[in-house]
Image (cartoon, rainbow, N blue to C red; front, side, top):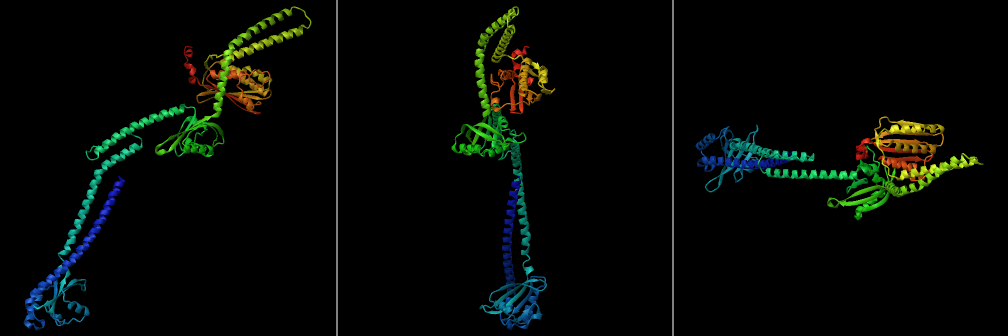
Length: 614
């Protein structure tokens, strides 16, 4: 609307300038015409006076008699008047002497001025504009008088009032100016009507553009008139309807893509042709450790600036038009961390041939952990297949040995034999070793066997308190401070109390052995988001990097009398509870184990029919 008004004002201004220029030219032309008309009128009036005097003056003026002069003078006086058109009439002879005049006082005077003489000696009629004292504008008309033989015998000079002669013509501007004003007003009114006629359609278009900018594709132009805009607005409404359908489809597609990106565990970042982030998933936020207060787009720009190798790979791929498959890369993050990743890059073309790229990042440590888990699963699968037969083959001889050792010990107690003390001690050792072998076999069988956890609603704090009570005496004997910080507001979980007690006992006893004497162990429970967490932290010897890589491996141990089964069993129990077990350790500073359980409503096993029937 504003632009339209500006254009109207510009057009109107140009029109006014053209009109003013045209008026100026017309006025100049009119002024010239007016001067010509005044001159012609003065000459006509002079000719009329000449005709009136001709009958008397058509002879030498010097030969006029007194009576003729008197009659001519009277005629001149009748023609002249101070308020009329003719002010003075003079008859001048060829000697430039005034013979007769309507003013008798100047008769007999002779012209001597060279200017006057030059004007009088002209053989052509002259009309001169002069201004008298007092600002009176007059016309000085000089006519040469000729006889029948075209001989000049004198001059007729008339002094005319210019206002009287041009009185008729001076009324023309009074008529001309209102006409121009009326024409200008008419043009302005025409522009106003035109602007008013287009204002409603333009307002409709403006409102439509405003609504579309807000993303409201339900807006329709309501145009009640039936003119040249009607069909155009109908087509616009249909187009807006189609755009609304396309926009809704786009939103649904974008929503599906966003859902898919969230479901993908890989870190995905999409860059446009300017290397700016156009899309990403939540896994990318976690992978790059993006600060919560900073936008990922800005943060990833910092990542690119910190990693020229990554930027070079992106630009190389764009130049060659070929993607990248599984390229191992070390990335430096703005906070100083480094992450080892496996990069894949796919290119796709946008409009006008611009190339965008999709970057996929995989954590190499996670891949290695998955591979390790797969290897463990395969190992446990083999063990599970052999466990039953091995247990049967070992337990039967062990049971027989235990029975016969008991019988032999009972019989020898009734017979007096030399060195019976040594014999009894040997039998006791034999019985203990049989029991130890039987215990190892049972642990091995429990590890390999897939056992369904007997889950029920429990409070993790209660399990921790029972375990702390069991090991309290041992902590006193070792002079180990046993501390606890249990959050009373943690949620219930689904769990098997006996199995969880075994897990806590395994970890706590390992902590005692790592401390040996004079240390401290702290047990903490807390709740974070959807998880219930227990932490067991000691200030013992800690673990080296080599030990940390194998800490959950079956039969791996650093103790001389250890079996290397406890932590492997503990991890199996946590997995059966849909939990996670992890740790952090620094040599010489201690170790912290983290047990992570889902809250009761997040445990998927509660949907199993067996649990519903309990």
